[in-house]
Length: 152
Image (tube, one colour):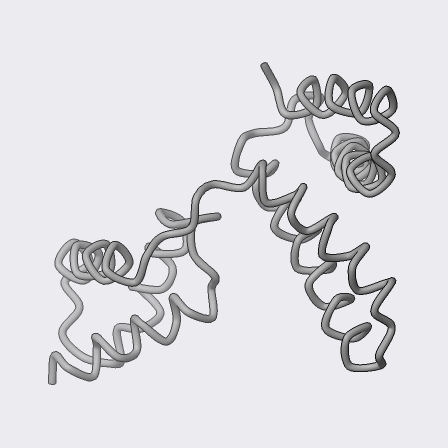
């Protein structure tokens, strides 16, 4: 079942149960999917990779809004954003632990043949493709830099 079909079914459930925050989050996901499908040059069916990118973008937007609301003491709005973030997280792949990340980065370093920090671009490009949706790019970047420094 495609993500879009899952979302449609869940929207119906949320409407029946009158779960406002869940309904808002699901509608925003559906809206983002529809926008992606109608973009110029887009195909009718979105790849799983594209769906994950959409979900990550929505999650990041909610997180930034949440941080802003907390900073400005807008607790009620922050709670709404947090509730929507949790709904979006249900559809994202399980994040990697730091141990798993280290193992994967080691594999990628060997695969690419990285020998110094100057190989960062090659490693980051490969790692971003392989680990898409499972680790934050900032954390990935820091781990790669750390491991490339230890090679020297």
